[in-house]
Image (cartoon, rainbow, N blue to C red; front, top):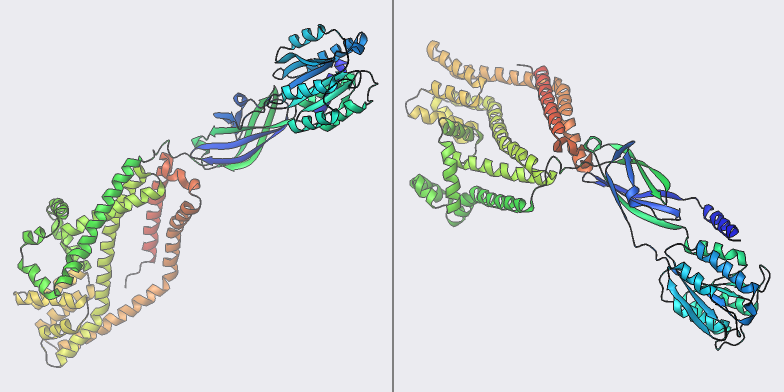
Length: 615
């Protein structure tokens, strides 16, 4: 009978095959996180048995149980000990109880309630099954039946136990002397959530009796044949359940940024389960090669940036903008030239004076001040060399902090952004100088035509140039004014214009000066000579524009080919940063970026030579 019950329980459990699945799979900072969910498991998943494979390669992994395990519950056996149970009935009851107890899991508590004229808890709930069997062996049937009172007592005894709670009632007759009615007992079982299974020992298997059937049906239990008690025990306390594990695995550097297939293996009660998930994109771990920036360092850097920005704001707007509000502009300029260098510097705040003093030490190196002054003058920037150097340093620090904060790798990308800011300001200055020189060359033909018109009107060459200075636009008016100032100091007009041509890198003006020198030596009409020169310059400008139009396709191709990798890299940095993260967080990525930069530079130089045509 017991073997048949165990076989029935095994078949019931085998109806649903154990399985598992992976959910909530994600990667972050070099780790893979997933939830392993087991279905139809008899025993829970073993966290220590979890193994994770990425593309068939094992990686270190840990797992822990999610949620609290379900309480094991308790089972209380209620045995009829009335006089009618004497003989074969009590022996049959003992055999059923033995099979029932054997089918219970080891962590489920069991107890014994016996009843005759009164009901009593013979064995309280315990894990000692032998104690229950020994107590049942000592039962001597005698007296009348108090079945309802016994079931109510058992229900009250087991009601406080967490988890599944079941009663197994074994009797060969109906209630004959209970205080409680069957309806009240049924309502109490339902309210307490206790299931009562009844084995009617006096009836054939599958039959029913009125009172016992009411108790079983009302509580959600069953009226059983003697051989089915063990199956009920196995099915009630070892139920298929969903078990979950939180799995964490390390992502190797070699797989960072790749799409791989994740396989998780685990065991439950000795049974092996394997789950193969779809392809997952693995994010890299920046902290292994590029450590995270300490929080205190970030606050220090932000403080420095704020100070630098405040200083630059004062330098750009304060010494001109704020002062000009308080006094007329012309008076301010006069006072600026009247006061000495030290007195002007003394009007600035202490912090700014300290920074400018430090900047002056670098500017005073041999040749540096003259070079910076020349570049600032050519670019039309009205700053002193020390102020310009301090402004470059401040912008470099700000760009470095912003670049490091955006990328999240302050230690590496911060200095890189600082270098970009420092050389970027130098590039800005060069571009500004180039734009002014180009504007000078574009204005030169029209200016020379005005000079020729003035010469025809009877003006001398210095007077004609003076009229251009008064009526012309920058930058050509300023350069001619500088040339005329040199003539007042004793330099010849040809040498002064030649110096202007050298400053502005204007070959056309050099040819004009050469023509003026020749005219001085051999004579002739200077106005006609200048008009001929203007005509030649305009023809060359038209040819230059035609060549520029013909080479526009090549230049556009060069711009696209050079800008495409840079633009694509920026787009990937914004949209899929984890995909290109190894490029700036790994030594190999730094090497690849360096090689790419060299290739782009060489390509740009080569294409610029191909599309450059001298006119």
